[in-house]
Length: 140
Image (cartoon, rainbow, N blue to C red):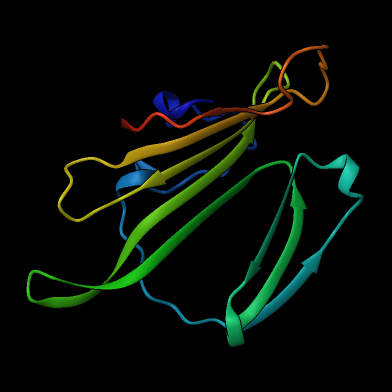
């Protein structure tokens, strides 16, 4: 997937209850948890590690990952949690693994994809880069 096809989800992808996952707001929840699920790393496509300070720690290997980060802002006279970053990781039908980084700003009409990274772990080609990085900023 590249930044232009964020809505093309394949079966088994992480899905949102909303029609456009990049445009929803996140509610503020404080949960204390510590999870460590690490099946054989070589059998999974992605690994995610999150350290949320005194709230908890997560370490997991998975075939897809979707991370949302929100931060407190003062906007329109109110304090609120603003969902400012999404990281979406998924595998394509052709075996390509994609990581997409999307940022949000209250003054923007649409979010921006700031990075898209691809790898093809099952199709090594001599002389080709093992990780392709597209750092062009695009509106979604």
